[in-house]
Image 1 (cartoon, one colour):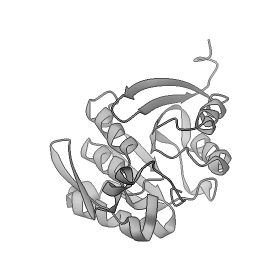
Image 2 (cartoon, rainbow, N blue to C red):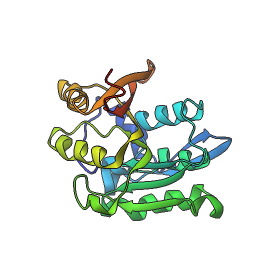
Image 3 (cartoon, rainbow, N blue to C red):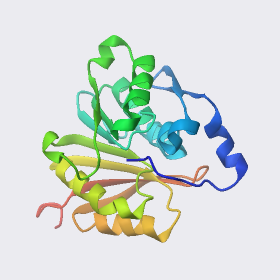
Length: 216
């Protein structure tokens, strides 16, 4: 669902996205992510929000070992790849057109043993949700910037969440519409900011579905 036009301020800000790959070190592994801005745009580059979310997961703030994780709007798949390295069973999703590229990054960065715990699956927000059950953890990096997608994104997160699910959203709050989505989310979820990276201006929010128990 990340396949939309996107503007990053300044030529310098865009320069790194035109590199054919980007390399990171997470979970005691070197992670080399291929990028393809020219053909796939924002779906095929690594955004700061993804890097910051991986850093947060790497701290162990959320125990992923053996848990089911779904990444929404995965793009390059960096977050899902790191989640798998941290022991999760991961479903990495994006729109159909991005899946070949996404699958390539998964195969090039995960051992065959870890690949067996990862599924790359098409998901257009709000569509064919009956094909998905609930997950322990739902993650998304920089996926709340396009206002017309908000209702379908919220519908998707609701469908994927049980009372025990944890939602982690990493983003910059660039515009009022970004805050508007968080306000929409708060209608059905208890939302808390758990991390802020001042170097990149990226916030991480966690959310749990509202229940009589956690509304007390």
